[in-house]
Image (cartoon, rainbow, N blue to C red; front, side, top):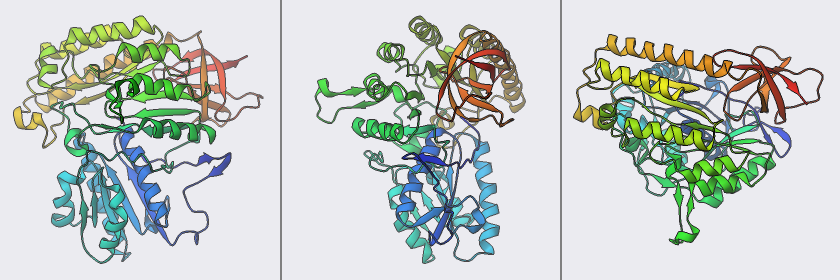
Length: 473
């Protein structure tokens, strides 16, 4: 998953520039500031929170020092994220000491586990809210304004926020996240998500399609369907199998909104991605040919300890099947080094897995024991830290060489690219991704183009993370 990010960009609404940030200081009597950490789902949740707060008369601000409400949407996947959150809370406390009445809240995955520490021991926050309790925020804010500490970390078996239209805080007006499900039923031993986000439940299919259609009509040209395990999406309100919507059928429903609307999704669990999904992807040009398929380890024994429910051989067969049906499909992955009891031979199994799969990109981490997980209860975190780091470095070096090779192999090819905006390094160049999720940079020239346009780009050069090209007719 991505490291800490906080981005606030204007969105396009009904053809006009719309910003959730108040230009008129008198427009809102109260202002809120929100930072998001960790996975894409957290950024999507922050957009739901922003919508709820806006209904209560709060306007968003980019400057936390002028906010009456400061929120951190947290991640518990890795220890580093928790350390970052604590440092940010300490910084907010210093501002709060000079600004009576300012409230600080923690949202998301750290809420349940660290609520007592944040509220009572360290006195860093006034409000703690879990991922399923965002609707209660207005009441919790009212309680906190009286000096009480406010908490709601209850998990739900029904909440999907299907009826809330997110305020697009993290958007370039071209791409948007759409949450299709919440929670997770896969009890991977290293993962805290089932305990922080609860059991899996799928959102009403029609509400998903309507949100995607609304985004398209407002000028967006790409949606990413989000879930902890999108391939297990299943919605059947009538309990009639002929009416059931699987992930493959949902992909098709979104794809037929318009051929100009691109569809991506994340994340897939190898055990659940089906031929139906793969054939649907192959059938529709506007469903991007890219799959994030976490492997975690190349050793069957370690995979069993992780409770990943597949073997090394099964995973390799799945990758082969993807490439049989879509030879041009990009594949990325997650890799963990130094899981409990991992031997040097099993580390080599992971490296050989990477050699066989040749991923275009990977998120790579050393194992970080998370309190409350099955691994923390069952296994000893016995791989020395220096060994974890050395193995991780070897994994990163190998993946970097594979990424360079993958990108260099695209030189001379022509791709359809969706323009997302200016290149970070030059306003004279556009940037956007191709179907395989590779960032592409190319000169604007004298063509009358804008964000949201599709162009054909022939690749002339490449780095390990960027394709460089020229627009062709």
